[in-house]
Length: 141
Image (tube, rainbow, N blue to C red; front, top):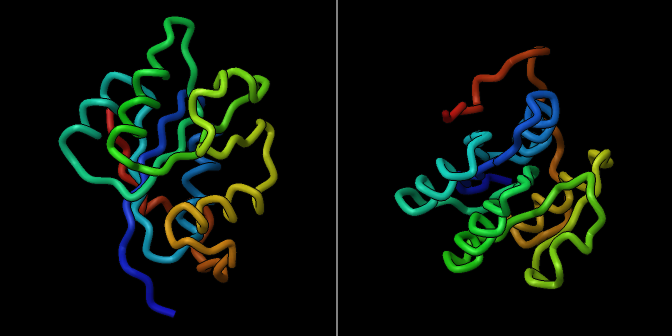
């Protein structure tokens, strides 16, 4: 089944976690992933470019992630919150946002991404790529 190209923003400050999230998201057909670890930059590009979804795996002690969450919500961009903290860190402010606890199960993330982008929990077959092939990821600074 041919799917339209989707753009996803990943905001994650852990390089290993970012790589894993990108790989899982790219397993969905026709997805371009953009990555940044900077919340201010993420907000700026969200205000300039269109995205079909986001995965936010970063928190900061200054609460900037809430500004990012507000920007996503006001822009009607669906997003998934991935955190090693308890789910109540969201404080009930974003009830429509799926929460995934780190460490996470790959199938859980893939299913949520499929639902976010395509409105289905049917996980599409994984495209086979050579190990380490990062051709689809766009690293943003």
